[in-house]
Length: 94
Length: 498
Image 1 (spheres, one colour):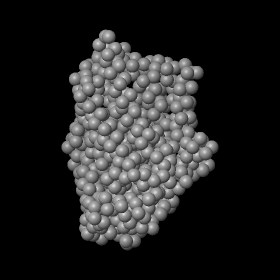
Image 2: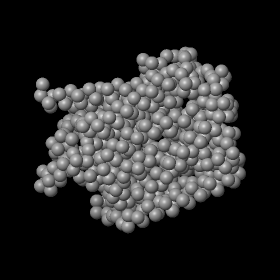
Image 3: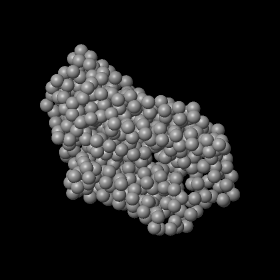
Image 4: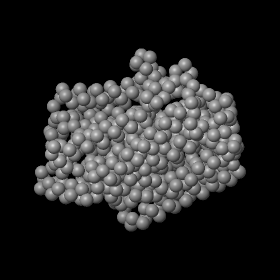
């Protein structure tokens, strides 16, 4: 498999993982239930689970943004701005 | 009286700090006033963005919502905001890059370049209409707390004028740089104070576990999903609140303004990541304080429950510390008013006024923004005169309404087929439906699941309709000259590589 295809699949996996965790922080579906529930650390189980999922999502985002190599960084920004400025000054864009 | 001395002191320090921070820049051009000359580093960005969103809603409103409805409130402004770390990044990556390349200064700039002047002019109007309930919520929260802390010495209607006047003064003087520095100091202050309050409230009944045991014995419904016959914290209700708040955050002016103001990419990523991480701690605390308050200051309901933050502070802390804790809530409200009023004033000056008067000079533009700050503050104070909706509900309505601009934003950055007509109509359909639902069925129709809408709330119906309108109309209309021309900038090969 080519490197670019491999990178595309890995990027897609990141997106799926991030979205799955996001949906779980928007609704306790799958780990909550109506009516009386057990408790953990004084809180209802589903509330404790939601906070733990939120913590996991935070760590996943941190790794994606700063260590995965897929997010924008200052070096990439400088290169992109350079290309854009060249085209803007030539009137290719706008 | 102690409370008023502390609050007045904070206001005066804010005015001085704002003025000093702006003078540090030594310039008075529009770029400095509106986007701080793209000079803000990590620390200021993180706390300024945080403080510009965390508000009377996150302190007084969430304590009140927790008090009234229980643990389901955690899905309104805590865990549900953690996804903003990656959602903000994906949605605003191009805002940062293109903003830097094109020297954008306002929220309407990307919409204007992608869809033309019509869309650029609509954005400030829709965002202003959506912002008003949120701003009113802050001013209302401030008025109620002044009345509570002074035990009626300063009535609600006098308190309404007190702090907004200070805010207008330091915003008009300091611009984005001043606002960011004031937000930062206020953000640190209220973050520290919520920890003090949490400690005091939980210690009152022997710690967090024993306090929650007591609440559970008296009010087990606060620990349940779908209580009150499925009406409170049903799955559709939670999903509606959670998405309205999260998607609304993407669409308010603050992330745009902070993206333009960021000095580095790492600062840009750090502020978005830190926001959710800090919210899950800092807003969970007032929510838990509100729940615990059911056994300390029982019997509050409706708008009166918005006073629970101040009342429980008075019941569990020495007077001077209680005043400091409530002042923390004040600073949260003040910093949000800063961020939102400033963002709206910038939108009106740069997107609306400058579009109509393209030759306006930089100094006049700054003066127009200053006048807008004063007018917006005056209008919101006038609306807050007779409060009848709790702070939390007002805020969710505002976030839900502004969230409809997410489709044109997504289309601008990620969909070449998007057209100007679709962008304009989708925003009008989404915001129009929110207004119609509000007048038809009041706040309940927007916030609560409706049987006629398959158990979705009005916000979600308006949001889905807006999305369908955007996709559908883009498919059946052809991109015009402006959209075609914008593709070379918005889909430049260099951007695709990043």
